[in-house]
Image (cartoon, rainbow, N blue to C red; front, side, top):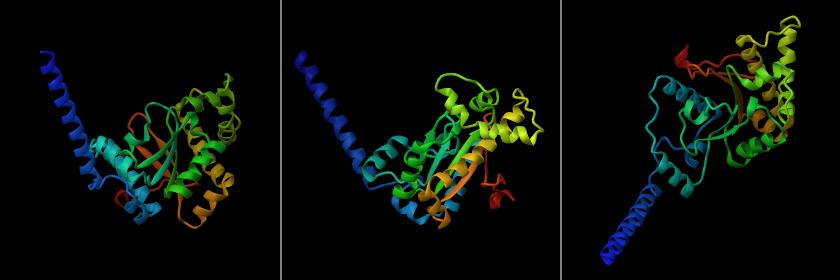
Length: 253
């Protein structure tokens, strides 16, 4: 009986190895059209990448996301390498995973996430790597509605290491306070959302001022930087330029 079981276990193991080898061999020669590749990255422009993310968000909110085989995408990218077309820096809020709300797959976008979507030298290093080394064409700084970090900054919360992070959002708080005659209602969701968007715009300026490498890429139009705000209730993402003006696609006009 033990010999029969051992034989069956060996047969199952051999079959599993054969199946894995077969899958790898299959995806090695086939990359689905929805997977970012070296060829697709080289053929695209920053504007095209932005259109792709906007279309992905529309698919998400309309419940028509692309039926990806994520396991195969993982194998493909391990064999062929990664060629993300964009870098999205967003808040760590659990309701705003960029790959999901923008309908992207494994290997399609770089994501950097931390509370308040703020930027320091470490984030700048990652952005430089994505754009200058890998060749990503688009940088998206994405905030969201009802942001806890922004609310904390508005209320001037002091708590351990969180204090220095919230300090990075204070310039946006001060800007909105100035626009509202020196007074802020930190319990008002609209006020918090205004600060969150202003913080996104401030982070965009910080990137170009803090990284000559990225600035050169933007000036030569190899890379574009845009802001975005996600509505955590609907999932809709609104994109805007460095002045805060909403970016509208042709099919939205």
